[in-house]
Length: 452
Ligand SMILES: Nc1ncnc2c1ncn2[C@@H]1O[C@H](COP(=O)(O)OP(=O)(O)OP(=O)(O)O)[C@@H](O)[C@H]1O
Ligand SMILES: Cc1ncc(CO)c(N)n1
Image 1 (tube, rainbow, N blue to C red):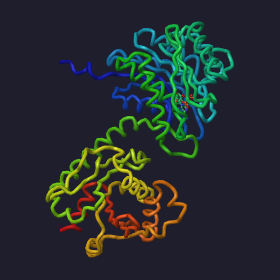
Image 2 (cartoon, rainbow, N blue to C red):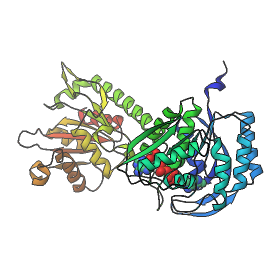
Image 3 (cartoon, protein in one colour):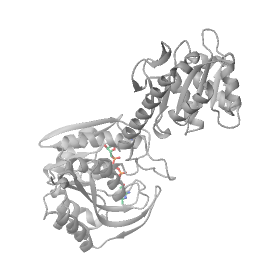
Image 4 (tube, rainbow, N blue to C red):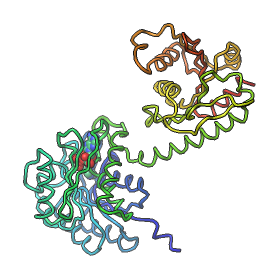
């Protein structure tokens, strides 16, 4: 078996961004996120951060060509992309070199950085149109880039379609997608012109980080082409990837913060870790069920574990036991399976707790008893409480607001991080003890100390 054929490769021919947000760095992270081995031909070194480009130092056209040849001749390239190409000499060298090979080429016609700095010399525009665009499997301009290439003004979706068609039919690219990130529409709409047809890709506009969106989007398309996907399918995946990357952007620097390419694999990976760890802990809880039995509330127990803080925003980002954990003979039993979004009360308690202490991601609830609280204090646990009778009217009136209010009140009452928060109940509300911990194992450890 030749295992080499299972590793796909993608080449980026682009500039380096020292801030790690755009360019070569964004491309490599994107390739990695899709499980593709990244290759590089660096065309320029930029001294850049989230606010500005301070210097640009171009590599010689000969060395650019040598980098492409070195990797193509030995390793092989399944798909390639171009980003910042800087000047006309480099453009000609890239065109001459890639022509010798047959890989699909995605051309991101980078002209100006988010911060406003030009990344393509004014006099290199013609060379880009003459030498690079005709070699493109796909060109991925944003609004200003599509205007420069097509020569028309773009305000509406119809204009974007016209520009995409011009780039294909008059400039000779195989396909073009005009991106709507800069169009003032209610959604982020990109229009593809390919094989004589238009196709739209839509996603909601999200608040987040947009430095490196264009680079990461075109790199994601390239990675998926390398993996053998068709063009339209590759774009569909890239669109999902970029929307997620913007939403969970890496909030660093003082300017435009960069897209987070890791989320694409990190969220599924973390979900699996959470699921595995909670499953194990629930099994252990069932094993020691006889000593938990007296502490099971009338409404049942739940056991929850949230994704890491960056990804934990709503109860859907918190795993819990569907149908709760209930008394069962002389033990306790999880009613349903472990699912994200299975808990609402306890999930909201943990989400609020994480706003103060992001490392605390897990919790479990027990029936209140004075004995439990005494034991907690004897064991040196930090204990706090809230009183539902003190809940302000406006909070009472808001659906789902009581628990976050209670947790916040209890946390602020104490100096230092509580292990346990209880409340004594109210009209038709059962008194409850909540145990918090960094992980389900941590919560179980505390639970065992309390119920020994
Ligand atoms: N706020 C946003 N919410 C959702 N999608 C967005 C947002 N901004 C841009 N996009 C999408 O991201 C992709 C990249 O588009 P964009 O027009 O931002 O690229 P760009 O201007 O070339 O980026 P850059 O020059 O910063 O690398 C497109 O699919 C676009 O629709
Ligand atoms: C090196 C580099 N390439 C591309 C962009 C486009 O965002 C950038 N800012 N820097």
